[in-house]
Length: 389
Ligand SMILES: [Fe+2]
Image (cartoon, helix red, strand yellow):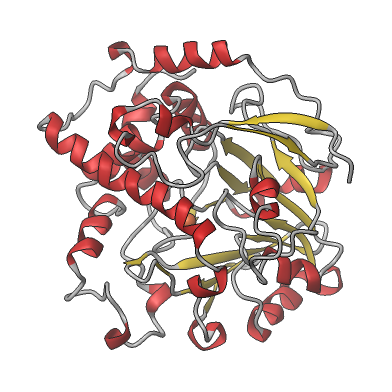
């Protein structure tokens, strides 16, 4: 398709604008702004006016105002907070840089069919859970969510490996229409798009701004990624306010509420499946440890098994849990994930909070099937208490 609009890609803004990231901003593809031409072919999204850079900087400046900070529980010391944010942020940044350095085939299980856990969450929603350890150390797990759409076919959110068992799930839920949509929920979760798109060539691919260009950079370097895959819809950064959803297509919009966290380091697309009240998201909120995703892996093969997880796994899991005291998770969300534009991030959180979801399906960690709304509010309490954009 002919490029028909120009977008500015500010995924590196977080790294450029805070001293927390000063020591780690030199990773490849971070710490620099990219100006890219995005090749889109969805009429409902292109030609969207973007706020000026100056306006963006004003927003960033105002977001750090003490007036916007929560009035609830605070970190005990600035040193501890800085350490927390640095560790968490380093993970996010290193994740992004690692993705481009490492052949994707080395990041995934060699035997996905043998370790995949398939589970029906509702009559219309099934998850495909697999083990996944970032750079072989952080056990975060991976998960695809398969949703039977109202008008037939399925939506795949964050596809995992194409296996006979996964295809059987698609056939059971999607019938003759198969895969209708493939959603790459952020700038990282896209490795398996190509094999599903090859099997279902009529599937419409959706992703965040910058992902088509990122995939194009792998041309000739990564056999898992077909750089000729066409995106049906690319979510635009700085599109109005998060409370104004970007339209995908009538059948998609009818089934799913959508919020795009363009200010998140990984640029998260969050969906709400209205018929079953299910919230589906990738890296916005982890729920570690990843138990289900490692249920078919022998403990001797693991680095983060309960009871003998290594130090880094225990440390990371303390940031990314939802059980018990979630102060560290709040700090991560407040000081790291939403640093680039906290008011805008808070507004997006408020939109999600307005949906009547009863289940949260994350890509990393356990699916939350009880007290989902209360859990979400616990983790994002500071954003819910704070000003929005
Ligand atoms: Fe992720």
